[in-house]
Length: 517
Image (cartoon, rainbow, N blue to C red; front, side, top):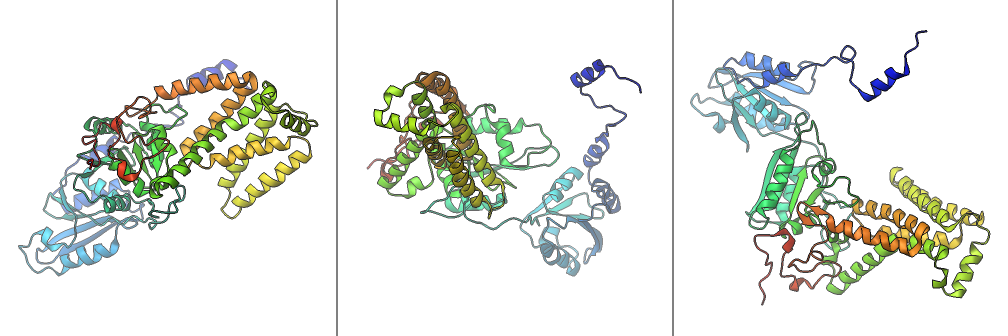
C-alpha cells in the first residue's frame, strides 16, 4: 500500500480547495443570459425559454396553459406555479373572461378582473413575478407580458403570542405571512405617513424584506443607515429575520443583543410611533425593532397596559429578579470562600452543617448545579410539548433531592441555583435571557477566584463595555447614559398622561408626543 506523506494532509488542510475533477464547477452564465432576454413576439419562443428556465416537465408544479383569446383571436398562454398561486382566481377572473370575450377592441386590463396588473418586457421580470406566486399572461405578437396578482402562499391564522404573554391587552401575534403582519400593524396605525418599503436581500432565493417607519417621525439618517446595511448584503439566501439580524447588527460577537425581536403587533406599533424602524419578512412570525437599548429588553408590553402602580411594581420585581439571577450564585460562592465574616453566626453554622459531608468546594457545587439546571431547561424546550413539563419536574425535584441525599451538593446550593434560575424566566426576550445566563457564569468564576473584589471588577468592566456599545448609532444605555431628553422610561415608567416626549436618542422629527396642558 502506497504511503502518503503527512505533509500532504497538512498542505491540504491549509489550502482546502476542492478538486476540480471531483467537483467540477458548473457556470450559471447561460441561465443568466436567458433571463436577460426580452419577451419575444413569438409566443412559442417565449414558452420554450420559460420551459428551459423552470426545467419543464421535470418541475411538476409549474403549469403552462395554452388557449385562444376569444374576440381578439390571438393565441395566449398562462404561466404560474400551482402550489403558490390561487387557482380559483386564475380560472374565475382570468381564464374565464378571456375565453368569453366577444369584443375585439377591448384592452387587456379591462378584460381581467384582478387588483394587481403589471406590464413587463424582460424574462427576468417574468421569473420574479412567477416566483412570487403571480400568474403571467403571454400573448402571441405582443412584446409585453402581463403579471397578474394571484399569489396565495399558505400560512397560519393569527394566533396568540407564545413568548410575550400578557393578561391585559391585545392577544394577536404575527404569523409567517408578511402581508398579514403588515395588515395587523396598519390596523393599529391608520396613518398615511406609515411607509412600507420593499427590498430583495438575496441573490438566489430572492427573499423579500419590508422596512416600516413613520415618515414624519423617524430620523432620515437612521433610515438611510438601515437601507445601506441591507443593500450591502451579498448572500444567496436569508430565509428568516433571525438570520438577517446576524448580518446587519453592528457587533455580531457582542454578548448583548442590539436588535429587539418581538412577535406582538401592538408592541411594534408603539415603537413605530416613537420613531423606531421595524423590519418584517415572509417566513418569520416576528418583527425586528431597531435601534434597541438595554431598557427595551427589560420592558414588557404589559407594563403599559396595567395601571401606573401595578406596572411599576412588576418592573421592580423584574429588575430585582435580574439582580438575583446574575449575582445570587456568585455572592454565595464569594461569601462561603472568602467573606464568611459577612454572614451572621447562626446562618454560617447552618451553612457549615449542610456542607459538612459534601466533598466538593462551593464553586464546584454551584457550577455543577448551574450546568444541570441549564441542561434541564434545554431538554424541556427541545422535547415534545407533553413531555417538557415532566422533564422539568423530574429533573428539578428528583435529581435535586437525590443529589442532596447523596451528599453531592448541599441543600442551600439547590435553593440558590433554583432561585436564580426561576428569576431568569422573568426576562421574556430570548437573546437577553441568553446573555444574562452566560454572564452569570462569568460572575460565578470571578467570585470563586477573587471573591467580592472579583465580582466588583467584572461588574465595572461590564459597565464600561455596555457604555461602548451602540445599536445603529444609538448608545446602548441611553437615555440614562448618555443623558437624552425623553420620558425617562427606564426602570420606572411615568403615568401615561405624563409621557409627553419621544426618545431623544432617536433624534425624531417630532420629539413632542403630547402637548403640555
